[in-house]
Length: 65
Image 1 (cartoon, rainbow, N blue to C red):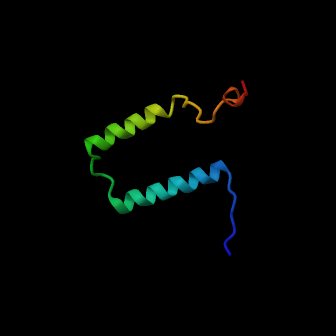
Image 2: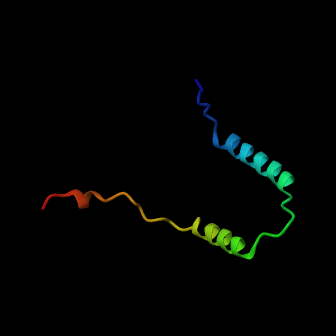
Image 3: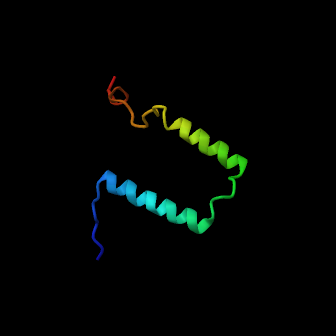
């Protein structure tokens, strides 16, 4: 049976950074990205700074008339 290991945000980011660095060295990321992928990543970064609408219905939606 596997156990869950809880780690804090600092260690999580360090692990992600290390995985990214190792992938870059293995995958030879020096090659340029395709233009479409560059556009999509830029759009994703732009959307990260905007507040997303909630998908949870408001309490008013459940009020009985």
